Amino acid sequence: MNAALLAAVVFAVFAVGYRYYSRFLSARVFGLRDDEPVPSRELEDGVDFVPTPKHVLWGHHYTSIAGAAPIVGPALAVIWGWLPALLWVTVGTVLMGAVHDFAALVISLRNRGSSIGEIAGQVISPRVRTLFLLIISFLIWIVLAVFAFIIGTLFVQTPGSIFPIWVQIVVAMALGWLVYRSSVGILAPSLVGYVLLLAAIFYGNAFAEAVPAIAEISVGTWVLLLMAYSFVASVLPVWLLLQPRDYLNSHQLLTGLTLLTLGLVILQPTVQAPAVRLWPEGAPPLIPFLFITIACGAISGFHGLVSSGTTSKQVACMTDARPIGYGGMLGEGTLGLLAVLASTAGFATAGEWHSHYASWSAASGLGPKLGAFVEGGAHFVSAVGVPLETGKTFIAVMVIAFAATSLDTAARIQRLVITELAEYYVPKYPGVRPLTNRFLAAGLGIGAALVLAVTQAGGKGGLLLWPLFGTTNQVVAGITLLVVSIWLRRQGRPYLYTLIPMMMVAAATITAMLGELAGYFADFEQRWLLAVMGSIILAADVWVLLEGSKLLMGLRDGESARETP
Image (cartoon, rainbow, N blue to C red; front, top):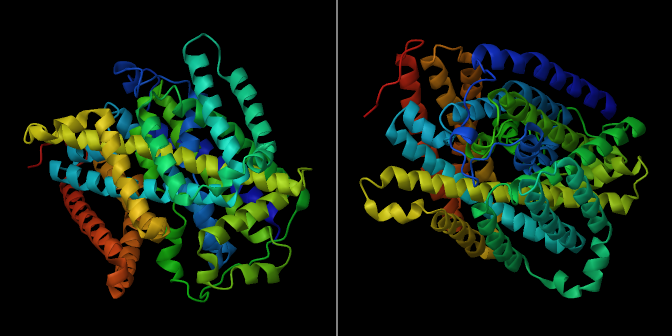
């Protein structure tokens, strides 16, 4: 099968989805209007609520959701063959993931920029607010620990990436200060900053060789440094670091996607993997684990947290939600598509692919997953004239940059979640009032993640938590769609477009979580933490789904909200 032809088909589906389905959702389901008030203008504070141009915010949103997960998940899921992975990325993105992200953004915009967890309390019940925010907090806790460990590991494996990543931070802050403290537009200086980043990538290996001590920094030390950085990033105004860095990352991501796509067109490579491979050695069942393994490349609860946690506080016009929410997920689906193709058509022969994916244990490690994408992607990029080694460095930096962006965003979301919980309980428990302070809330969130990352076998817990991260991620997506469905029905608007995806995601995640818990309890002495966390998450998920479903079935279309005891 020709990989370029497959890419063309998927791109066509994405284009049709945006042209017609997102327009239908915007007009008929959500009823968006240009003249609607938005939280960024009503609550503007210069820190979190900042009206932002559509193209700038698109870059922030896209790069915040496009971390390492849409690369890692598809690069592992192709062990079941290219067809299931490609179908799930395509159908999941258009009918589920983009709908989920768009819906979460709209419902937050219509509720003063509140997070989806806070909105769940208003739509269903105060009890559900606490349970859902607890699940969200668990998810972000895992995300922070996992991504800090992954970035630290990649720094150790590829010392040449260290210099450009930290140069990018300095350039981003300078860009943010220049743009928001003067009348200079962002495009021209961001392009200059991107050229500086490319130069830093070119000299990254030379810097690592000139400063050999940097290559001796351990993963644990990098985790500490990254957590400290995340704390600072989470309390700084969004315009100073988060927005400009994400805008720079959007240049890098678009460049990478363009080079990969051009390489596909030029090479016309053949997919070396089988279409379907039902029983790989040691692998879990294709269903439901395909839908858990590929999360961020098809539908992801973390995206809803970004939409309602940071993006909704920066949208300058209500109708911008369509290109940012729905369109941003199509960009993520494109990254997932290229990850599938790089991991199946980036190999020279079918024998090489089968050797790499000989068994689940061989393919499930972080190195093999990222290695398949980096090697395959560099092979595509080399067809455009980029030297192979330079291509590997560019793609490795791209992966690390977006993993770091997800880390930044997750830290800010955790701060906001802790603050929301504290504000809700202050009337009953005045002692929690200090946690409404953004510095203390950020410190608690980062501190808990640091303990998790450091204490779990010197950081290995980050990788052990990855399967739980995938399942919890989809749990959050299912609950988000349920909250939106109830809200839509109360508004008298069509709700089946969010309810049907919710039912599919909820069924897949509950089945997968039960399977994972069985494995955790079978090895309870070694995996007791996973067993406890998974049990709490599953119990909270089932409770929220039952309470929300009962409320949904008892509603009449257009019924006004009522306080639930």
